Image (tube, rainbow, N blue to C red; front, side, top):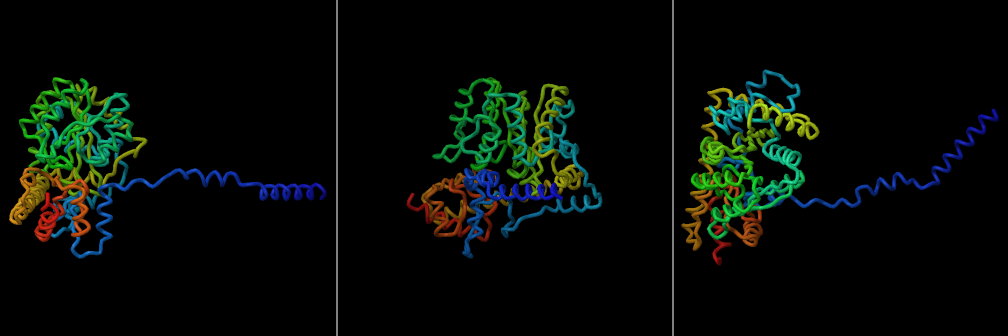
Length: 430
């Protein structure tokens, strides 16, 4: 009994000491994140947030980077609906391999390299399924920094803002090269070629395969040939981001022309592909990263390393979107339907460009709007200043990024007149 009493007293004493003692663990935990500050808003996603918060019935969103029909509504392609109907009976929910769906990757490579590509036949391409185009870029950036430590990436000015984030977080030093000419609202071909020529031999360059984001300005076929020859002379590595194949012109082969030119000239290249825009699979995050190698043995080695990079990031890619893509591209009837539907989307964008330009010209605008129809793809680099964009938002409830990038997918027959009039009003004094 005496021993039990002592034990009780000691336990009580310890509890008293613990209660009277400062709880240092809790204090330190409360300070773990005290230095974390709010992240800056994404310049593109922030536009949508502001648009949704605006109660005006006249509001127009031409900042969204997703296709809309002529009623401003999201679209699910008929080929996608049919593919999902076929998939529904499979009930397959197992993990994909780290490299993703073999069938999806095979069909995707045909789109980029060609149906009868010798590189595919010779198994010289290391390729893995990725988390859309963003994931493909990030995987390559990590691959670059791991196996070419100290190398840099040359990125065009301007480019999709997330490109800088991707290579920065992969700890790859960045440099830029001239691309857009503000005065002509076209390609700064001389500046581009000078930068390519002056870059150290064996440099990495990020190239937009087609429908350059955000400018909509692409080199001509002849210019691509000159770029390719200079890359060859300098032994540069070209990494193509191809987010809009088929969506730009309506013809996937035409939109891959830049890549085919580089392949013809004997380059070993890397490619990021995405099905967000051209199949409307935005939320499915379906993409592919491929690297052309010297031979089959090297391709096997490179693929193994790409899979190793993916393993601690996300282990393996999602299944459903890959099933949709492989079902569509692997069936001649569904693929034919997809080609028709992607051309319809591209043609609507091209038609809205023509209507917007004609509407501005009919209003008597003193400015040239020729660049609106010369540019291609989802985005139009309008030439509007940040101040003019602010006026469009505050006075007309029209939302776009402050660099003047217009998403042509947000332009419809119902709002194009209103948009043209607002642009005319804010640019009259220019």
